[in-house]
Figure 1 (cartoon, rainbow, N blue to C red):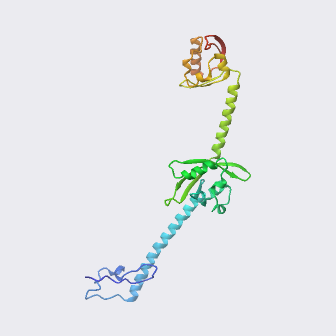
Figure 2 (cartoon, one colour):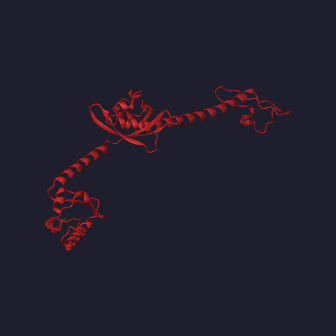
Figure 3 (cartoon, helix red, strand yellow):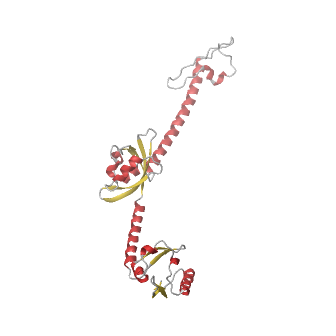
Length: 282
């Protein structure tokens, strides 16, 4: 059985290289051959040194590349405009990026060990607690208000996944303040419209086109036509015989198709009881 070559030790923390690994050994007799002559020690040492230098350069290049990637990842983690948090399962903060700290209105270094829930408004804290319990559920998100001293509540949307060992949450926090302000403005406009719509002394009804489905009618309409709001909403306008003269209705439809609006068109209408009334269509 052929004996294995004995490795020549170099740096104990680096590689071990046997004489057969040296590049100039090709074609030389095996050490067990009768014509085998060992290389001079200086030549062996020089060859080992070159091998070690080549391997060291490879390791240095790999180390430099890994450090570059770590810096790039660090920049991405810290500077991305989304808050990143690592939490324990009970909501204790273990790590946060700069954007996350800014969302909470706190210094990044002061967050570690604190409870994320302490930044959540009292009104939305139950939502956050449920989010913690159900974190990791596919598609599970929540919207909460963050309290900052001297500032109005900041709205954020949270989404989290569970680490492989199940002990931590990887949570993303997105600032949705602009969207919330837009929603609030839209809701305020809707409320104002509803107040004007229901309080108006002018008969009004809302119809969804092209289905011609009745969305709503105001009290003035109910009083003038005799139909209740509940019996009209959700039904087609064509189910109600509101026009005393069908030709007037056709003219209104033609004008609407041609110009997109009708202003000040006088017409006669029928009430639920069969009576006739007169009005101006706009």
